Length: 330
Image (cartoon, rainbow, N blue to C red; front, side, top):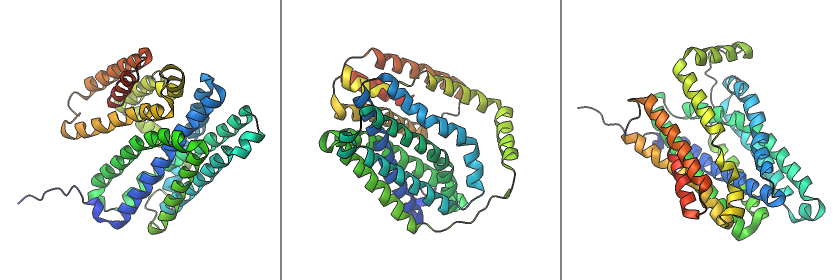
């Protein structure tokens, strides 16, 4: 008799459940934090360029360290790196809590406060470059190899759920308790995630290439991507589409000045793409995308562009929400 796959196989490991809880709490906190930052920076400056600079401040360190982060993570114990990364995020959250305090607002000008926020975003970009590789490598060490696909599915689903909840929660939090207390909530969430790491055991370093020169490691990785033309083409196409479709960064402007829906509406707008992504994740589980993958990718990019256009011309809140939902689906 053929054995049936157990959809809850990974959840039968207590340590993995703790890991999922930590990830859920942290992603809720980070997504809230980023939404609050976007809202407050535009609220202080009323300058669209200031929103673009938020992304620039984060992407410079994240991209510059991306190639090195994987190599460094491979060479070190994952639990230790996990704790270090969350501790660094906690310190950054503490910085946000301080810089949004009434004392700072009454002492410094808006321009100085915004510069301080950019600095914190910049520092956070360095940590994010490492956190992705840490997460993926840690999951592989928490559960047996044979159920890793199941664990990866649960981990991804947890991330998607938190990405949906975080922005909406941030929008209502800003309206109900204000910027400073919302940052306080984020601070407590990250602290809770940090404390829960005591239930994660130290993991062995399994990388067989310990001590491999970093440039040699990077060269091998880049050579693989270049040799695999399908991966290179997909990465390039996705990069171009996202580069010219970053309407999400302008949502504070739409929420405050065009749609006039306040922070609650902003949170809903920010959550809509994630809701679309979650729905598509479930659909793709039942309708495999492997057949005619190239055509489906082009169709998705085309739909992506149409959703951005629809959002750009809309002046009705729910039309904008639907456009952003379709943005997430594609």
